[in-house]
Image (cartoon, rainbow, N blue to C red; front, side):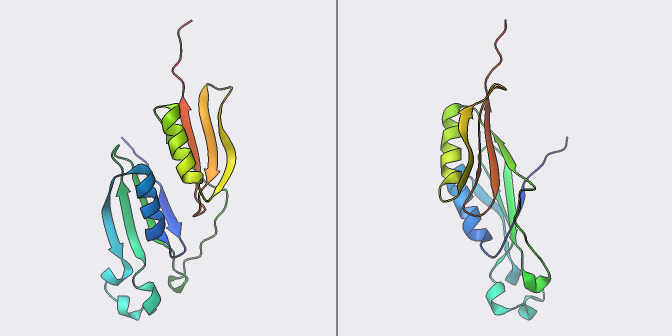
Length: 144
């Protein structure tokens, strides 16, 4: 079986973003390494040594969100765009509302949560860190 996990790149605020996601989704950090944990870090600019090399948040449902700080001193170049969304499949309208409202707070609502013609309760937003989310509850199919 193949599983997928979102891996986010941030411009120096990965720890802040992941603490925000922990407040939204719950869970525990199951990976937490700073750049100053790696050999040779003393050659890095002092202000970057405490940034996140890797951080992983495992939610109570087993979803894993991972992130790093993209550092220009390491030739990382980060451009936020509209090339990807993280899709969250929820178990109820209430859960959809809670996640959507939390994630969009301080960010931008792209498509408000609404009942759709395809049988879902769905919304799209960009959070305050520039990450794009789709939150979706699919209504159970009724037998006709």
